[in-house]
Image 1: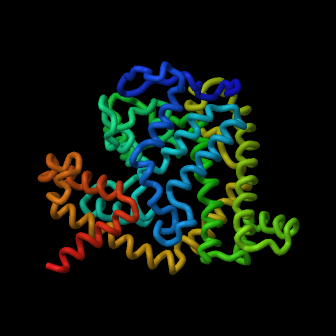
Image 2: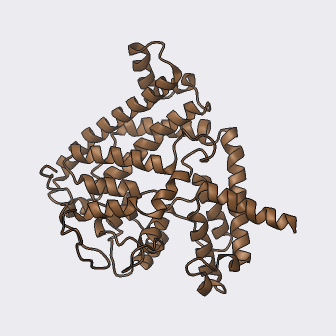
Image 3: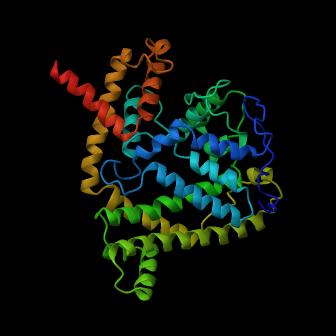
Length: 388
């Protein structure tokens, strides 16, 4: 790795881990590289293969899942960190970890979990908090500690990549982290901010690609939306008559290029204006140093509104959404009423008679399921009861 900018997180330095560890490889890997490897080898990361991005994973095996999305975010994050002379390993690691806490069935699954929790007077499900729960405790593979024992900077990026954390969510995160203070009231490192915008770039552009491939979006409608319209105009000028599948890929590719270029230009300006000379300086600023320009922000807002109405609320997606919501609700009600079904899950034996703790174990159990596992578990449990 070449020399880094002064505002970058130094790759061979860290504020440490919650549990001190020896260096079994003699220090050949930098701390954030080790974090990346732990995330990739975790069960939660592997399960992302069968978790929904937009489309339920059994609908079309060529469309994106949480796993392929996370890999695409990591690639964009690494490239932007390199261009900005920042810690590529940290940016990649945060990107790979950012979706570990998502439930099955995408946002509809999370909404259903939130409804179940709210009905019991409990806070809504939050996938960033759930990711922290996974990497600090729910992953249980290592002999010396629960969780993955990630570096301070990686945990900070997971918790704060969308900005400072306040209110009830901050209270929950602080209770989870104990004395390991992530300074939730401040911004995260520039690398974490890059990972957050890489997520925006990946899901907005690739949802267009997947929507076209699934037949739920069409090119004519995209011509009415500024960002994909510019890509289409250039494609049709340079490659008239291009087949639809290649045209769809080119739309996504060209949008990514435009968005990445915009972030790099705008961020270089913001970083220069900030005068930041260290990662600590970046954290102390009142506003992010990694951002889109105002014009591109407006284009993305238009694209998000288009995707919400034309894709995320498409009748075909809604029909599946209703089914998956019912699966989550049925499983939650079943496990909450019959916690003995989850006696094998960590913490349930102690939580049986505590409604709040019991709901937490039920939430952890359901959130950890893949789409396939949740569908199969619902079929097994409710077919069993209907046969009684």
